[in-house]
Length: 127
Image (cartoon, rainbow, N blue to C red; front, side, top):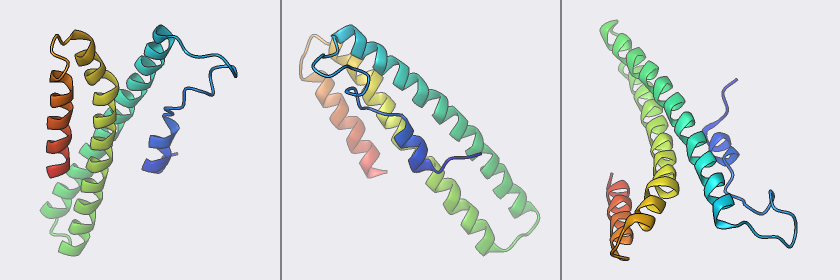
């Protein structure tokens, strides 16, 4: 059974307090392991979504070939576009969890990772 996109996004929790007993804090290694697990879940989720979107696009092509009503085709195009937007949000989240953290670790210039995040977010918002 498919879950609605918001359910899937919310099922990948960023809450770190629930796994830690009250009064205790995560150490850096534990948190990094949780982030690695979360970003891997996001990766799998995005791949599943992309396969579904691929099927939607093929269906749209078939509708065009068969001469289906333009309104029906546009409904499917809107659905595919919405699915791509949802996948894009997850890809952005994965970027922040994985790529940005790696950039912070490996950069000698402390402003470089921030500049890169601003650039990525700017391009995402513009699209």
